[in-house]
Image (cartoon, rainbow, N blue to C red):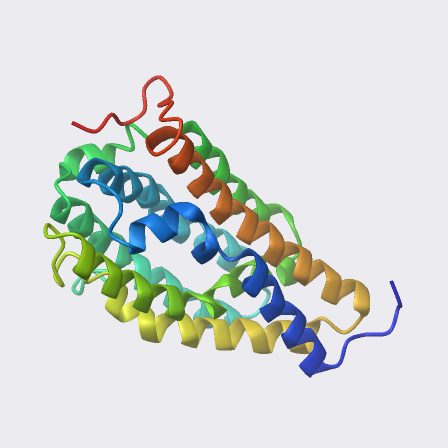
Length: 243
């Protein structure tokens, strides 16, 4: 590897190439989900396990806010907490995900209890929180750049699930509407930050490695869902069993 820093255009191109190769929109489970090929129980398993990710995203963001060195940075990142937790008046993303879970037939209290999660879901999501807690601020912010790729998957998901599942409505999928504007806003900020602060090739490589790790975490969550609920359908003890 050369020590020459990538130009801004090269750096952004390398980051986008990671998403093109590794983002979980490419996973077989997502292709089944978006193609209307899953049954209700499998969709429920996805909604239940994904809730743990939604549940821990504000924890991850609060962890990073505590580490940020300036009021301006903390104010900027605080928007993400409000997006997910709400502001006490308007509901946030976590509440909207609970509505999604109810919409596909899950009991809200059961989802909130975090019972029935796949062990790999816990390991993967907790690994993301640990990355943001333990790695450099540059790497922590870089790991959030999966949001560069999310608007495309959101549009595909909403269209595919509405077409493929009669038990899914627009109200069920209301979680995703705000994300179409929130994710680009957040990724624009994060991208500008890493472009400014990743001044050496080593810094740039660290950001790219963090983004690969985040993609791996999202991929691993879907690996676990596929293994437990699609093929070979080996559900671990204590995990959700569809009716």
